[in-house]
Amino acid sequence: MADLSSAMRSFCSLEQLAEGDSAFHRLSPGAKLTITVVYAVCVISFPSRSLSALVPFAAYPILAMALSGTPWKTLLQRIAVAAPFVVFTALSNLLLDRRALYFLGPIPVSGGLLSCLSILIKAFLCVSAVLLLVSTTSMTALTAQLIELHVPKIFCLQLTLTYRYISVLIQQAQQMYTAYQLRSCSRRGIQMRDMGCFLGQLLLRSYDQASRIYCAMKCRGYDGTYHVRNQPPAAAKDILTAGGAAAFFF
Image (cartoon, rainbow, N blue to C red):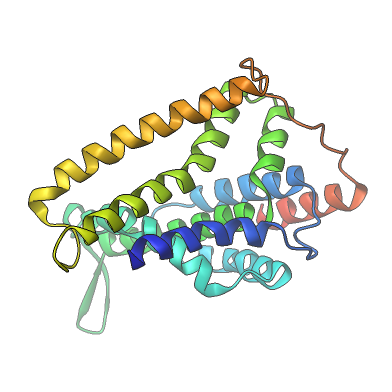
């Protein structure tokens, strides 16, 4: 239960951070999206064994967190979610490339080790940039900007509904977990033999809840069209900031 409550608080904290009023928050969504995309492309473009070249790119997350007031702890908690997948991919390079490129004293440094470190650094930098974008821009403003960039509306609608439904799914899991604990004679956690039934019931309850949400949307006039508010045009400071950041990254 504590884990689910923590997950709910962690999810809601992103919404709260996006409502801030810092210098970084006040940038237009288009400018922040441009900065994030250019930053990620530049970071990924370096060869797999380039480590020192990636060091200057750490300046952007540090500066953006300072300007936006995003706490390090919040950012690291989100990065930890993606860490297992990245670490597994990075460690596989240690087995694929064992040839020693040079030696640090008696310790050989293989190409796989350099590739492994490069993947970890790139993943940390790119995930940090994306999380800073989400934590300083509301999902409504972000999807509206994507639509202005001619991203298909159906994709933006699916992105919005998926993002909004995460909290509903967590609430359903919380209710089921509470009911399970009240019937489990003070046992901690969900027993492995009950896990399949628990997940199946969660799927059915989520499907039923999604049907009710859709009916509520239809009652309020939803006809399949995704309506968004027109975003104000980018100001000169937004264009200069995005252009200056892109030039720095290049």
